[in-house]
Image (cartoon, rainbow, N blue to C red; front, side, top):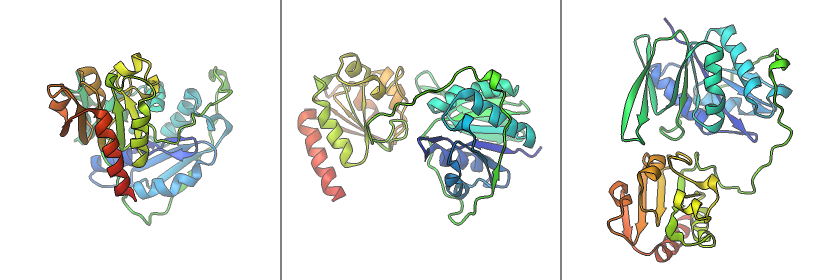
Length: 327
């Protein structure tokens, strides 16, 4: 059996998400580097502008769905559009990101197509005709291997667990504009307004550098130290649950079991003790730097580098040094 792979290339606010390159790179690895049977779908107004980039990652064909129903993300129109592409072209593996969008519609897409669902995986591969995937369990303390022998398998890949890779920088996009027929009776919800935040910083789940603060930040105003530090390296700011519960930071900055799971190249934990709930959200970071006055804080057991110091003295020094590096 020759598997055909369809990649959901997520576009948000007109920008192609970095997860597209990651999911295509993992699909290429699964197929031994072969790209002929790796296709992608872009949805929404103006999405065709991203086709060239998607092609360089290794998608040999790109479907463009540019219709009013898909201009603003909604689960049901997205499911209907992708389902029609799947059925017309007999795809056997459909891959997308384990982002808020992917987590929202992929399980329903799997049910609609009577397929198996492998969710929030960190890698996937083929063993003969069987799809296998590695999925972290118990706050990342161990992992399980999930197996699908279903005729069609749906997979969501955790963001930032592997780098995106350009397969051919000179690749030309093979674009097919796909016309969908939508069952409007099933579209029972309508998006009437999308309110965007004022921050220009990268989303936590996609940031390559994160500076996080814990209860030791003491108050909301002190988080300005972390924002200044993060801005010097185009990073984002996170927070522990303790800091969020204390009112020092909003919930959308929370990293951990009940917050966001992040996988940056550099994670700087400032005044964070390192509870297992927090570690579960950032333990896969490529490099972890911990700043804490308590030398016995659990965070140091996970950190690659530890600084036993007052964060209010250490962070300004880091900021100053980062500025020197970026000048």
